[in-house]
Image (cartoon, rainbow, N blue to C red):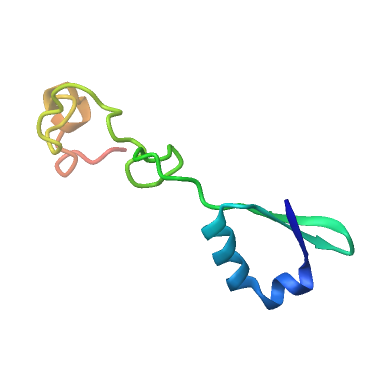
Length: 92
């Protein structure tokens, strides 16, 4: 693995990143001879979204017929508090 001092990396950052992307060879960035960071090429996309992705992470989570999304899950008759007329008999 090729290594480079942090000062040199700072001066040539964009060119070095392009080189790592083009060659696929990682780069070790050092500070006073000690490893500071490792620059890796991007992974090849697999065509499947990563589970950490915000969009699409729950795709396929729910199965079956979902019906209309605005239909209530529980019928209103099953809710006692909905049968009471709060406006006529306010809670005490």
